[in-house]
Image (tube, rainbow, N blue to C red; front, side, top):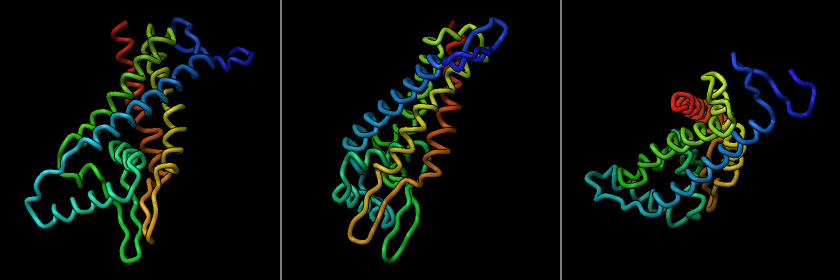
Length: 205
């Protein structure tokens, strides 16, 4: 292991090097994946048309969705949808009740459900690009590590998003629980999907 500022470490039989430049590339790819997923979630949320309710329960769910659209800034609601796309539930606190829910599920269909696909695909692409640009795709283990390191950038924005996308007013609040945002969205998803993207980069090399 080198003693310079590159924080380098050697992996695999080919002596490929994981250094600060590789980590920075992977982190940047993770940031890109988060931003791209957010922008797509924004479009999907704003373009989703709610279906005709076929039960009282669905009518109440859609009324709740409409209330969020009217009362929560669109950019914040889109961020909430993005976290829901990671299966991270939102937390609701009100004067009479509290609980957790998923906006995508409450919408009952429509374009917003594509968010469930957007999230892993963006991370797969990020992991693939991180591994290919790092020069580590020749070794499967190195390539997977480079891909999984997209979590470095993704984690930072997940934690930040948990704070920025919270909304409150009239005695009620909606938020993305920080622990779930960090663990599920910030670590589990990017490590698994990004690492898999790195493996695909190796297979395609």
